[in-house]
Image: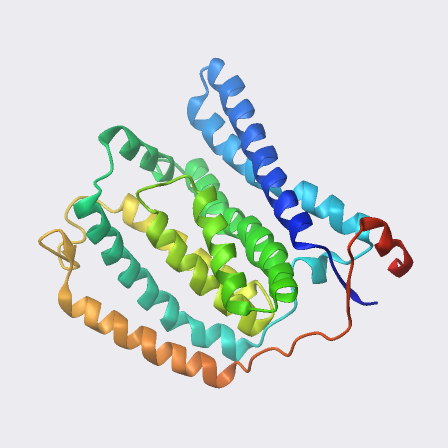
Length: 284
């Protein structure tokens, strides 16, 4: 069965609709539940359901095309060597991006009212640990990788015939959807890098792994006691020695990853459709 690629305009419309659909659901759920004085649970529930529902319109579209979810969301398997090689890359990336975040906040500090958003990552019980880790570290990254690197960037790569533009545009939408003007630069850079990884492997699994590492460390840092990072910090920044180590680890890790991860060949068994009705002839 050929891989069916819809028009770029169709993909853009579907992405925008999916994001609005998911955000609206999240706001409604959070608002209704908050009125019953369950604000913390409402926040978690709204975010989880909202992100999950973002995939619903795209999944329905995939089914209507007659394509497989495995192909449509770029979920092909990856080698164990590539997965292991990306570990030092992820560690270096976390440290480098943490320092970039600190530098950005020197010029654009987060207003105190918005810092309260970080409380959703605070673990104060076993149930909250399960919810926070399950959503922020696992399910949230999975839904986002399926939507942005799996669905949207994959279509742009074929339609634009330019991997660089596809990764840049996908990363831009990824950053904008997070609705965090104080983190948009950092999120955009991460999005571009994840886009490169997804393109090279032809799969979202390793970009998902990196996404999970990044979010996992964010949760960890948010829950460490005061003073726990004294060895890590240097006058409000990441210790220069650690930055140097992170850059070296990232560089060597990428060399290793590239060495064991050849670029996935572009699938030639594809069909570009200009109208959704054109896909009916390819349904099994």
